[in-house]
Length: 173
Image (cartoon, rainbow, N blue to C red; front, top):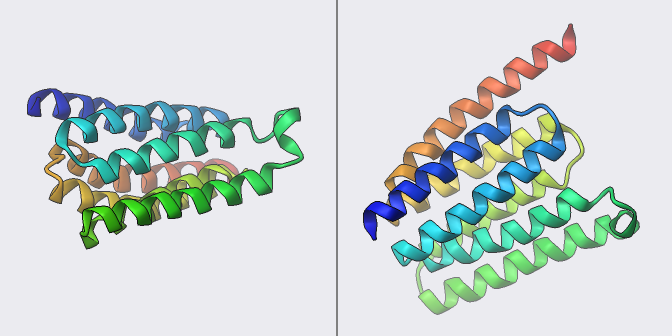
């Protein structure tokens, strides 16, 4: 199971890294959503249930964020974003309370930054939120023995910075 979880984690990392290199918001959001599903599987295999719960909640929030400009959701986008953030926080705190570990607070912060960014319209803002999210997941992944995901978090930080520089230059031209 450990090998399978690491392979799934590396696939999740690959998609996560790819997402921030994409130009269009919708592509960033959907690729992140798929990556989150793989992270959920990895955390379940590792027994890191708080991470699984937070990435599941992030997947749900990412789905709604992807749909936020569609007619049935457009009117309620702000309410959906707010309710998703409250749900992530509440479920995360319950999970942390059940586990009785301070470590379980890290996925809450990581999920809030990541999904909060996905509700934004500007791609650079999404990347900035992703950059804030990565350190929380890095620490959680390392302590949870998700070593592929830990390495991925380090690479994600570098990748997001590269994407921010690359797309900032393109916007100036």
